[in-house]
Length: 388
Image (cartoon, rainbow, N blue to C red; front, side):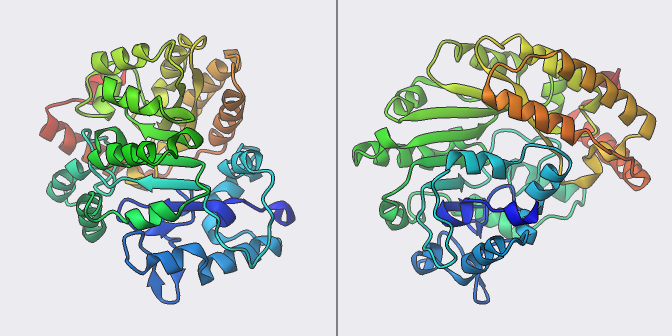
């Protein structure tokens, strides 16, 4: 497999984390940032234009791939494929079939991934202050470690004054922008970027993708999107009704559902993303059946990911009998679904692979229950009342 393990992103993609640091892509291990010499490359650095285009890190990454090696930054995709899953790397190869893979090529940016800071209107239980500024107080109260410097940068950098517009202007080959957050749809900078692309006549040749909680949707956004080549939303959803509200506090399910239903019949492409975690694993079958109600309108089989941080919220925190029983129920529902889109076929394959070999970690159960009870007290909620 390793000889074939090549990805087009190091030749055409720029990815920026919430704190402004440049990374290989959003799927790469968080410890593998772009480093030029001894310096981590920042999208907001005035000297970044020199480093973004073709630095030593990219050259080494390309050489590794061309030599048949699997870079450590790319182990997420490698592991997913090794157990039969459909990885993002395979998606990118399909999207960019004509890349000329040479080690000395310059980075010709066609795809841009922007995490627009950590401003968010939700405080999801499986999130962190780097992606939601509202969680800083909670993490401090519960004495949970996090990178405060990165979280503060994520909150302060993403504004019109700091944004490197000159870098954006130089991206003449840009075909796709993927907006993440925080929550990108509440970002004023996001709207400003769209308006500038429209004003310069570039919008019609650029597609947009979003990772969004879909709590905010208005006519201004719909109008701005109408100027672009294509718009696709990846809607984050981890439960139905009260369960969704519990995990994605302070989400209002009725508002979310109304926004979702309002997208029926639009030209937008709608897909879903689900984070598998200790809170929702037992109830994934209910979520899959709920989404299946929209099969005539959206891509309803969600892309699954496992929670990364805090790690004690992972499925592995559950007792093995509960993991095994829930896995069996999830597989039954998955096998009853009929994929209606190409992406759904891919997600179905990924879902099956993500369920393999999940083993309990007894060291996680106590911190999971302790965290849950403390956060329940702070939010006046009760996981136990929802668990059955």
